[in-house]
Image (cartoon, rainbow, N blue to C red; front, side):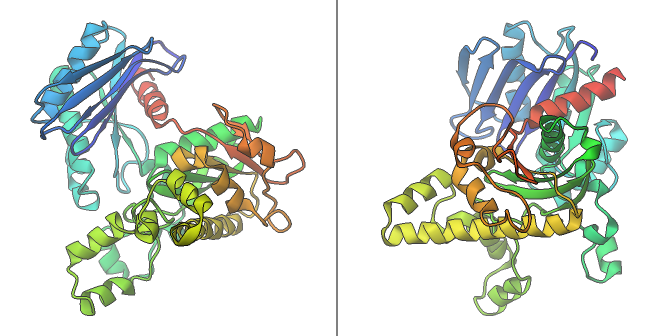
Length: 403
């Protein structure tokens, strides 16, 4: 791999996360986050390669001010936007529609298309665009590369991507399954294959990305063939604050019977549902603590846990049918990597019919890095594979600009 570092930017509506990544050795010379952009109490937290931390607390009225502060911190370490070792800025862009199927060098035409997709990701694409435009002003000669959350899922077959609604309406308004968390699913599926000592083209993997947002994917020979999120990140699994799958008529019912507006229903399903809607907590550690303490509060937490696990098991079963043969189930992201209880519950009782089973001792052990938690005899391996979306973006951006 050619030498050179990539600055990975994840630009949100009021924050910017950044990591300077060297894809050759996977090192992170610098990383940080700018929080509360445009609000009182703006703050930048910067971490150097040796673990030293610096904090800047100053007004940052917009993303330009935030990225200039970030650039100053990088320059203080000799890693600024004009440093010779920096070959590209890699941007996480949430929605790429059907057009963007791979990392893409940002041109005026690409920028315009990302903007055209704003109605499909109104909370994310505008902030992603702001990051691109601001980074360009800091060094106009530095390549800007967009890496799309949706790209990995563009290989799903049309039968999986289509919703069964009038095709004219669907096509006119670009309604179809796009899927999200694509950089995570891509990284984890490949890392899982390496963990098994096999080429990704030989392996069928079900990836369970379980964070506050959660999604599942079925990956056949390195290609995604099904994923749980749809037109938006609302569909699919039970999440921290999102409902996941519901009967669409729930929306009509709430409008007609409860008198709720579209915006109120949107807020309910995206911010007041999922685990927090079921039991008032969206932190799996707190939910497990309440279950262990028992009582009425514990029973409410237990129900939330069981709903969460039931949905996961249903998707694992469905994706087993889609794939035909499953070589591994890979758990990743905050809950997937850290909750032994969730992992055990998801595969419990499946060993006779579907093959996956966890070894209690391996599952309970806390370790860094990818690991197998199923026993040697298991027909389907169960793995914990830490996700690394920043590395995935850096590798893809680096490959694009260095050829």
